[in-house]
Each structure stands twice: as structure tokens, then as C-alpha cells.
Image 1 (cartoon, rainbow, N blue to C red):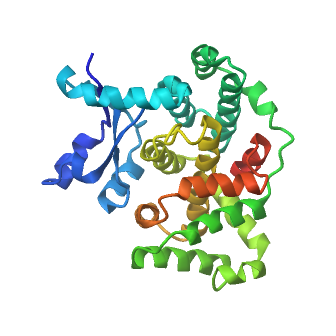
Image 2 (image 1 turned 90 degrees about the vertical axis):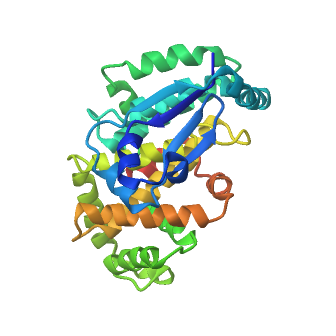
Length: 323
């Protein structure tokens, strides 16, 4: 069987809108452990608008390359599997990410708690030499109708607004500034926080920020959460999660993903007050452009920083995504 190519269905509409550009021009094309994967580049403002405004659950299509063109890709996949045997469960783990993050019957913040529990469980199976249990576990977990017992596992976790804000601002301000748009995003964030810049964050009016944070939570109970959902789903593909690098295990990739989600959350919380939905597309476009020109070791640095700070266990990540 030929090696598969997976691409978002939305690409067809983007092809018409962005002609004469082809998907190879406006998408990231990555060879993962199991497929060639296409991901639209959010730095393109038209793509950001399209992704954010899409109300239907993002769908993906698959075609198979002919066998003769597949062989080099099959060999590359085998090399990945040889270096990292758990990569054999890449698609099951991808199904887990997609199913949980697009479950709109559950508040988006709680979806991260469910993913937290599931990824930690799957990683535990790998660590204990029981990786063969992963497919059955994921099938049962994603088909569960009642997640109350899992969410009860996190009942003792208390949000910490200061922790979330510091983590999000740290990532956002660490990125290189690719254009005036990103500088405007940063300046607006600081203005809305009532400070002149990152060096004056200690002077922040925390009650004001908490009010902004509550507004975010309220927005996430409405259809506005779809914009956030679509952006983070696009980043699941952009960063080839849950296994972008064989240097890190599935849980460590989730550590990075939580920090990335938190930065996007802070972006929405602190940039959007008083703005229209379309402004979020502008902010995401600028943010994505900044991600692309920043340190290629960003994922590694985020993972190491969180581990060194002792903030990479499932309780810490639950607090981060809830805060």
C-alpha cells in the first residue's frame, strides 16, 4: 500500500482563494512517522481568517502515493520507528488529540484536562513496557460518554492566574518580532494589562487581569471557543504532535503543547478586549510569523525550562491550562 498524504479538507477552498499559490507554497509539509502531513501556515492572514472562521469541525482527507513514490518515505518512517518504537502508536495518539480537542460537548479548558489524563496514562503504559495496551485504551477513552470520573481526578487543582500569565507572557515576548503587526500585538497586550512593557509586569493590577481572564472563560463557553479550537488543532499538525521529535516522549510533547496553548490563551485574553473577531486572525497571523522565525529549538527549550522549574507534571499542567 502506498504511503499516505493527509491534508485538511479546507485546503481546497484555500487553493481557490490563494491561487496561483499551491498547497506546497502555503502549507507546511512534514513527513511524520506515518504520513506526509499538510498544515496551512497561519502567518498568511487569509489562512488565519479561514481557519478561525470555520465553524465545522476541521476535517482531514487522505490519499495514498503510488508505491514507487512511497518507498523513500516508507524507509524514512522505518528509521523513525527504529529510533523510537512508541512511534508505532503515532496515529492512535493523534486520534486521541483530535478526538478530545474537538469534543465540543465539553468546555475547551476541560478538554485539556482530559488530554492530560489520557496522554499521561498512555505514557505510563509505554514506560511500564505495556505499550500494546494503548490502542484499546484510546478507543475506550475517546468513545466514553461520561468523563466525570476523569474530571473529578483534577477537582483539587486550583487555578493560579499569576502562573498562567507569567508563562504565557514569557513565551510571547521571547519570540523574535518579525513585523510591525507583532509589535502592535505586544504593545496592545501591555497596554491592556496597564503596564509599559514586560519589565513592569510586577506593577500589574492583578484584579484587572483576573477580570480579563474571566471574560476569556465566558467566551470559551460560547461559539467563540471554536476559533481557539481551530488554531490549536492546526498547531497539533504544525508541530506534528504528539511526536515531532524522537528526542522527547509523548508526555514531553504534551508539556510543550500546554505551554503553546497557554500563550495563545493569553494572546486572546490580553489582546482581544474591545476588538472584533477578525482582529484575532491578525493577532494569530502575527504570532505564527513570530514562531516561524524564532529559535528552531523552541520546543526543546520550553520542555527543558518547564522540567527544570519542576512544572512538567500533570498537576502543574492542569493548573496551567485552568489558570
